[in-house]
Image (cartoon, rainbow, N blue to C red; front, side):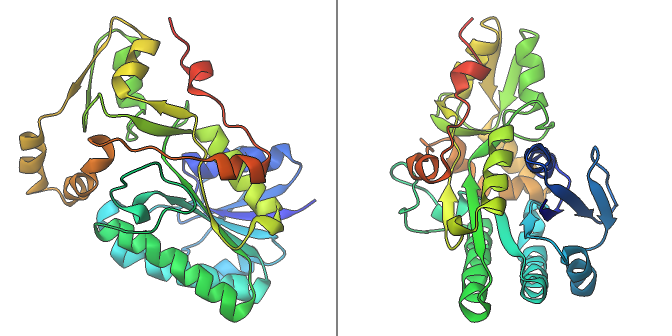
Length: 295
């Protein structure tokens, strides 16, 4: 039975815990607050506290990084976290699995794949690209195994209120009311199902031969928010929040400013091709049609 350390107890950390435990593995969840989840062990620590992180990672096959600082704090908070993770991995020889996203690709002109060049257009994408560079350099210098999963926006029963297909969207749509969204409700978008993300992170954590690169996916398929709303409840409607209003709010809210910096993800076609992941992982993502069947 292998042991794994997951940093972060949010929706993705919980989905990954479930996937690993189904495989019979032991999971320890590390958070600043000591958050508990199910039967997983928990430890209270700050991920930038390298000695504490190293103690928690000792005896673990992998360190799975699922934490996510607030958008406007990424440039400040991410580098010390990943540096601490690297030092802990070097000392314990645990593999590093990083939960990532598509931001390093910037504003794509076609479907994003493992071969898409990185071209970040704003700070968050630059930070995320820098994290992967740090991991690859550590792999070259210290011989540790590293990998990253770059998924699209996640959704699912445990997604919470702040995601694009989270409670703020699902609840009014199910009730036949109006969901108000950031972006164009007619923009085509790839969506990553939360349990599938957990499965893919578990596969990376338990399959060393998949290390050494980042993987794009998983994707349950492409759909507009208006199409998803129609599938859930044809009586519901979806309306875009006025861009001028968001720009006004952004004058006072650093979080909204960061959201607007990646607004293109929900105004342009923003899709990925996960065929390489599917072949290598021997994994087929849950299709949108089975989650949101036509009424």
